[in-house]
Length: 323
Image (tube, rainbow, N blue to C red; front, side, top):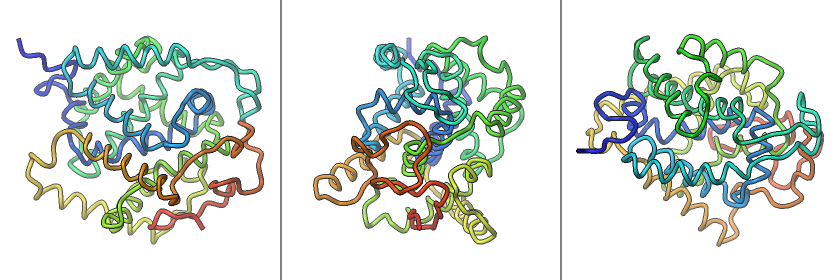
């Protein structure tokens, strides 16, 4: 029998949405940018990752892992899930310093149900956002189907279903309350990393015009609360650039043949990682976190650190720079 994986093409709304390459190219960056607002999630990930010097290599690897679960056979997905479970079993500890609402000594674990829920909730929200922005609006039933598929995705990674909102309406209410709450907080490293992932993706010089379009759309796609916490300015000019950029991308999708518009983004992920590698080899600027850049998890620095943005003073422009 044909193995169409955990998310069969003919019945899974998640697969339909994630197979749109425009969604695949945007949703992961936005999800990580928003995800960094949860201190326990970010501190746990940052403390146990080996990707601080090559964040986009790590992002590319994660993106390909997720695509294997989305699109691969069950055997292929199970291999990824087994490897991720082994990695997550080692991600636990205590916060070394105060981080906003999280006091020093707070335990964290990659297997904590709330942490796991937040991780795939920002993915579901970002996938929905970009599909509706670039392709078409989703019906209520499709939104419900997407959330139910993401609940299944979370379960595959070990998230207990009873720890999650059981339907789309409950998910949306919980998610909006989370974004508005004082639980959202950026450490210095989270601010730098979240901004860099969203707006400093390594692209070749030939792709810089596309980069400007990418950044305008990424900025406008973020919830106002997220832009506020990152210190990203957003006024009438940025709103017009966002709407124009989204319209251009949406129009291009209409005329793009399905064989190019639908499918895996693995090749694109690899090109980003390769551009990052070349920049590092040639001593060119690319986002990195080196030992000592952020000596404390606490958000307490008032001076720019190596490669970091001054806290509360980030001003975004279309070239993805900070002034």
